[in-house]
Image (cartoon, rainbow, N blue to C red):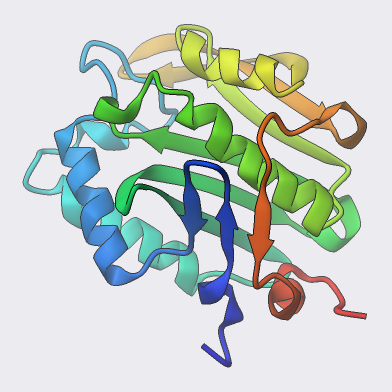
Length: 212
C-alpha cells in the first residue's frame, strides 16, 4: 500500500511471521480469543477484556485492533502484529511508543491462544519485536509488565534479559493485584532466534524517524 507502507511490514523467525493484520487476520484472531486465552479462574490482563460475553468478544477484538490502526500517529504509535504459525493466526504481539524519536523507549504486550501456549512461541514472538525496535528503530530501552500470578510471562521476560523495575498495585475483578514492571536495556538483549525484518525503510516516517 503506497500511502500506508506499515501494512507491508513483516517480521519472520524460524517458526513465526508477525504482520499488521488484514481483516481476515482479525477474524482469525477473534476466533482464538473465543477459543480461550487463559484459565477463566484468573485474569492476566490489567483490562479484563476476555471477560466479555462470548457473543461480544469477537467484535470487541476486531474493533480494538481497527481502532489502534486508525489512531496511529508518528508521535504515538501502536504496532499491533498478529502472530502466524504455519499459516494460522495464533495470537497478537504489540509494540507501542509515545514520542519515540525523543524517548527511544517502547513497551510490549502480547497474548496467545491457549492451544498454542507452552511451545516457546511467546519468547520467539517477543524476541521478534525486540529485534525490530532495538536493531531496526534504534530504541534504548523497552518496558513491559506482568502480574505476579502470571509466571509464564515473567519467565519470558527473564529469558530475554529484562530486569525488575518496581511494583505497581491494581484492581482486577474487584481484587488487589500486584504487577511487576520490567525493563530491558539495548545492551542486555541478544535474540535467542534469528529475526528478519521486511519492509521497514518505507515505514520509518510513521514511527517518527527519518529515512536518511
